[in-house]
Image 1 (cartoon, rainbow, N blue to C red):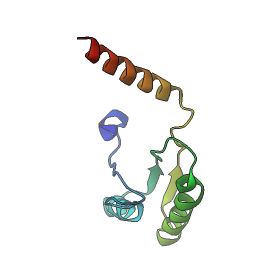
Image 2 (image 1 turned 60 degrees about the horizontal axis):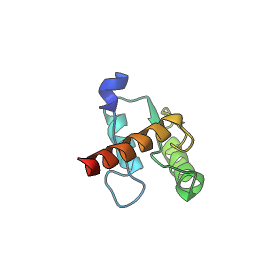
Image 3 (image 1 turned 135 degrees about the vertical axis):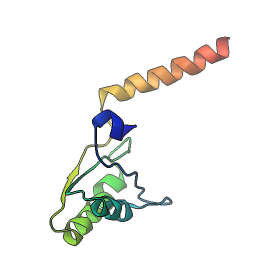
Image 4 (image 1 turned 180 degrees about the horizontal axis):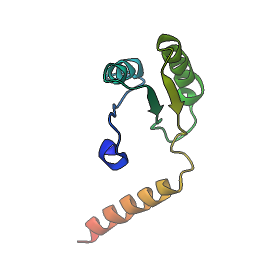
Length: 100
């Protein structure tokens, strides 16, 4: 859905732990498809250890492995105004379903 909404040629989901593909694997897929730039969108609610320690280490490794690849990293979801809207929508939805 993100690829369609943003008119992006390639989108790959990636996981930092307990899921496949990992970020290195997803990057390899994108590079094989011709990507010259990737945008990493951390799907985290806060700036935890993954954002402060793990993700920068992985990004550095990817940048070293793919010298011509531009790697951009977005902010986590924490603080984004739409997050409150989503939480409100979900809470109202569940409350409505209990009242029917």
